[in-house]
Amino acid sequence: MRSNGPDVQTISTGLVVAIVGFFSSFPIVLQGLVGVGATDLQAASGLMAASIAMGVSGIVLSLWKKQPVSVAWSTPGVALLAVSQTPEGGFAVAVAGFILAGVFTVLAGYWRPLARLIAAIPAPLAQAMLAGVLLSLCIQPFQALADFPALALPIILTWFVVSQFHKLFAVPAAVVVAALVIVVHSDFVIPLNDPLFAAPVWIMPIFTWEAVTNIALPLFVVTMATQNIPGLAVLRSFGYQPAPGQLVASVGGASILSAPFGSAATCLAAITAAMCANEASHPDPAQRYWSAVMGGVFYCVLGVFAGVITSFAALAPQAVLGTVAGIALIGVFANATFATLEDPTYRQSAAITFLVTASGISMFGLSAAVWGLAIGGVVQIVTNRLGHKP
Image (cartoon, rainbow, N blue to C red; front, side):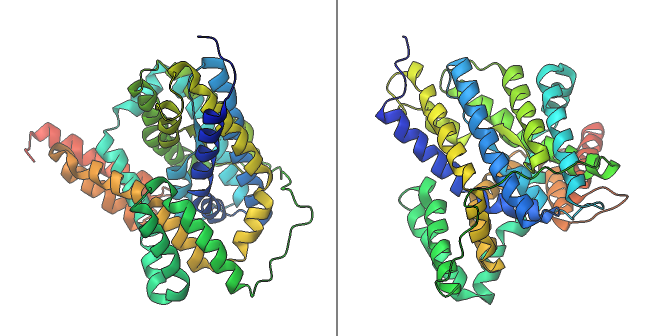
């Protein structure tokens, strides 16, 4: 069937996709960028570049493939950054890592040995690494609840109550309440940016070994394992036949282009892809790609206002941002933890991967996420060789 362009249904779906995708995770994006040394201006530029990169990528890929290819920033990836130490050399080194992670993603799209290598990482170990990264972030809301109950309690209650009726809108609703908390905490004095719109900031990358080991490799592995591969699986589950190499390489290319402006990683989406690909998007599967297209348009619009959003977030006490970021990741943490321990064959090695990653250790210039995956992998190999039963 020939496309007649977007209609009210696909436009409204695209708007919901953008609201859910952006407001459910932008606080953790800001925390991730600041965690590896970004200034407020660089974080605003990174948020803008990330939003526009996923918006443009979603538009182009959906129009090209005539499939609802929803694109996102890597929420697990920026969560990893949020618990990382600022690399020696500052944010410029982190940007070099973002670029290299994009290069690895392009290679994974077109060079099958690398794609097979990533696919060979046992899913329980990859999920255990992700769960270990998320643990310290997901406990922040409850630490804030004990230390700053007046700030944290309204946000947590809103998230919990709304989640009982509509899980997708629970975090955006909590973001709205967090904004109200910030306004009250600021005595209703909210300075506006001048200029109003975000300005891109070019960050000249500094390539070091640390950029490879502590930024690029962990970011690449967690994004491929928890975003790109599931994103492709979601499209297949709705009857579409995505071209894995082209789609993965394309989002990798978008990551390379947007990284010098502070964007961490662009990837295929899973949750918002399901929103675009199901029958609520459009009765005709051949028309559903317009929902992803319109979602991309709205992502770009939100990206233009990244400066205002970042400045507003800068007014927030750390307890507020930590609470919003933490509750936004609880669902991801729950799924990762379940996948970590579900298979008894990998239970011991996955538990070790989780614990090592959550410990936050850093040895020989390698981060806890790298050590967690490495040590867990060795344990699993030895267990398999010796033939131990779980």
